[in-house]
Image 1 (cartoon, rainbow, N blue to C red):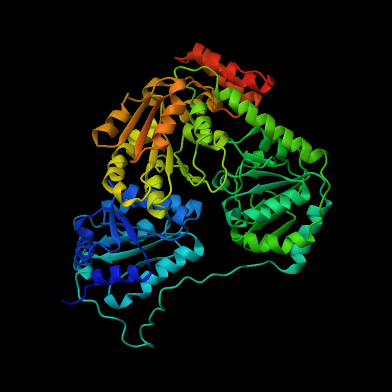
Image 2: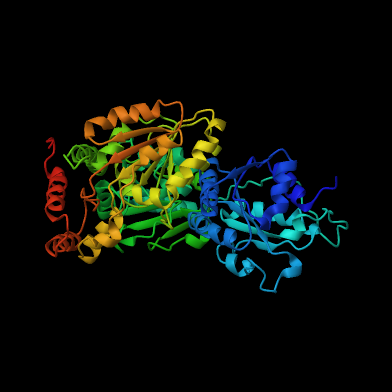
Length: 597
């Protein structure tokens, strides 16, 4: 039987050692779907419930594996559905390739069913590389370039293959000077290091500083040991951007935790009081959480020169690989004696974790959402992978989860879209089937798409050598993050019609499709529930009814934010009394060291 273009696409993916394609079928990719059948489902077709979820799964796979994630969808509506996940990849700098079908070539331009101008549709999200394959001889070059560009530029790329071409016989490029053939699949690796003069200038800035602060982002992940050595040599504290939360262990006494609106008080104090700032692998956008302009001398290290000097007036800019650059920098950095600055940082960090523990144990109705995560922190496996959805669940992930050992974690850091928590977890399980995965997800995201993706988990969990995949639902019947933003930013009371969610028994749904399921309605049930979920032999859903009025406003909230929230209550917030009570009790823990409520 002759090899079709669809057959060849899958064969080339196998050459690239692609083991799974996250996808949803449709007649625009029938030729490729047929090829999966002929190839004994290699690579494996992972059927999501929706194309957007397939894209998120590819993003989650790429984030946690370090390899390119592949997603696939039909033409028209299927391709459109991929966009949100692809934008998540673009904004978080994640390598993903989208393979999409298109109307038959002879029908293009004829207003045919499901015909969409896919070149226009994808030209922004896949701006680094987008091509429509109209003759077989464009392969393998077009597919190879899509993969290579995605990997090299850490971005999404897209390959459009019309439906009729997929079913045609494949013919390879014939003439080296007419159609350039592609090299065999391989990934090129390089280590970019700045020039020595600039590295010395950076060292001079760090050596002159007395109060050094480091901001580490996801770009510092490969340089964790070097960041740690530099912090110990300079006496610096290390704050972490949200996508870099897993770069360094929170057990290190000088690691101040997350920074920003979802961040910690020690990180806020670190930036407020430092005189020198080193930014490593981060494009953290919220300048109000960085030192005041003119307060600190600053150095930035980033592999991508496009993002150098964007957020703070940096004096020395080093374009290079974080690990290689720090290895060049370290021999030039003087060791500072332990002093008041490091002592202050470590005192602030220790006090913060005591505060978090007290806040998590405040009585709530029925369960304090902070305690969900603090209870997890005490028992999470050292090799766990944690995903978090956008919303108030991200607050508790950012502030309350203590990273240690080989724990990995991520969320939609820049697009901050709802919905990736569960599909990220699925992608993580295919990246590391031997590791436990935990998703922290709000009930809004579960109703949006998480419930449907539980079916995907049920469908594939037997492929995973470690079947632990715990979906923890923050069940508060409220779109909680927006509710608090309305109160704190706009001074508006909760608008029930937009914010209150229908009540759903998430555990009952999970139980109904054959997953482990645990309902939690009281705080003393939390620890045993986590123990049961983390020791289960199949995926589990932890359905925790928690209090929507425990405030996620940061501990360094401005007077204006507190004033706006208070005014919202006075304007007639439906939960006014309970809201005030929880807010006062939570805030009070910062001023009552050593006391538990």
